Every structure is written in structure tokens, then in C-alpha cells.
Image 1 (cartoon, rainbow, N blue to C red):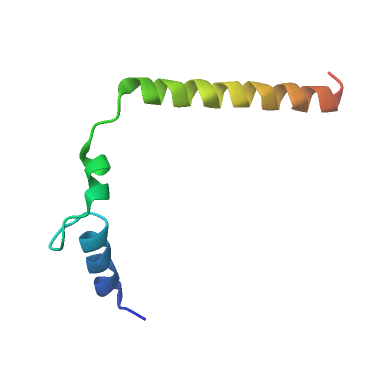
Image 2 (cartoon, rainbow, N blue to C red):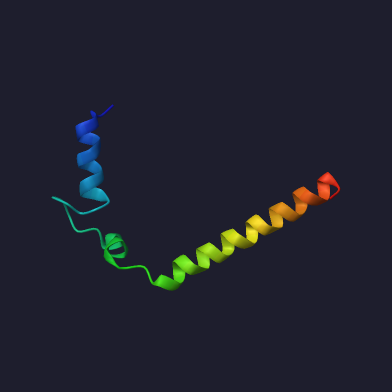
Length: 62
């Protein structure tokens, strides 16, 4: 088993391409997220919370 320091170094090299070969998949990590994505996530969470509350209220009989 690797030491914590070795584990962190492996993550830095493989996931973030720091001090290692360039990983083409890390390009996504450096791109900004569009603001609409966070809005969509909020709407999805709000909708899910509303559905959950409706089910909860129906089960309680209110």
C-alpha cells in the first residue's frame, strides 16, 4: 500500500497532469462551467424537493 504522500503524487500526476504526462481528459477540469448549468441543477433539486414534500404530505394524510 502506498503512503499518503505517494497517493497524492499519483493523483496529481494522473488526474491533474502535474509533473507527469499530459492527460487529455483533464482539459475538462480547466474549462469554466456555464452559468446555466448551476441554474439547471438548482431547478432539478427544487423540483425533486417539491415532489418529495408532496409524497410526504400524502403519506401523512394532509
